[in-house]
Amino acid sequence: MNPANTTNTEAGNNEFSFNGKGSQLLGIMLLNTLLSIITFGIYYPWARVNRLKFFWENAELNGSPFVFHGTGKELFRGFIKVLLFIGLFYGLLFYGKLSGNLTLYFISLLAFLIALIFITPLAIHGAMRYRLSRTSWRGIHFGYRGSRVQLITDFFIGSMLTLITLGIYNSWFTNSLRTYIISNIRFGSLRFGYDGSGTELFAIKLKSAIFSVFTFGIYYFWYLEEWTNYYINHCYVEQNGQRYYFTGQLTGSGYFMLIFINLLLGIFTLGLATPWVIIRTTHFIIRNLQIPAEVDFNLITQTEDEFKDAAGDDLIDYFDLGII
Image (tube, rainbow, N blue to C red; front, side):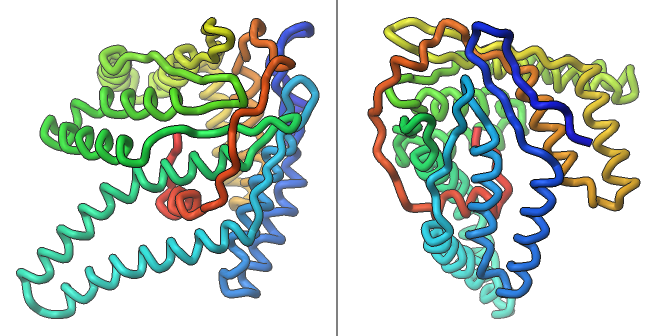
């Protein structure tokens, strides 16, 4: 069920490849599950590290693997912070409900909802700082230079505008977040950026809503193609003052076959094929992602520091939030 070793460029260009196999991921997932059960969940941070290391170390750029330097101990400290944080707010919510006081319950519920709005940007900021700083390639570390206060402010304003406009502003909101987050990512001396438009994303979603009605939902796969390729094609790497853009080559038919076969694998194996589903999806993305050939990765110099607070990374996992 594993595709052959997947690369995304022709010879002579920058080559991004992934060598992971479903059988390897299955072993990791089974071991993680077993040890998490035996330790009543305490092993969870180490399970996260095992999984992250599998994906990073099976991904290669120009023949050299990425390395994840995070440890279970770092994630465990973040895990404890997350448990205390979540426990506090759920405790206040339950206290308000059990008090029998409607006013107190309303206040606690409002406080809980407001906390959720602030938790999301906090989680994204913390996860980006931690996960990128703990990832390297040929000794060069990634990094994230965004401001926590700025991200919280932008997220709060965007959330309010999305709520007021009954969701219409969401395309501009998510586009703004993506622009801010990606523009603050560094890979040594390389700077990343994104220049997509909320108006164009809204047009893509509107077209999908209309066409999906007339095609009984079949157009959804071509919406995924256009939406994903749009994001990829508007991401770039800046080196020596020049911008070099990534290229997405995903297709609607490719998405259809990926999702259809993944669904069959999940149904007929009662979920046991999940590792192969994950690997197939990873191969599909990498195979259709072209890295700018003009970027000279041999000229990258180290500019980033390590950041070891993994609380944000745990919040990302707890709320199942996509980072970028």
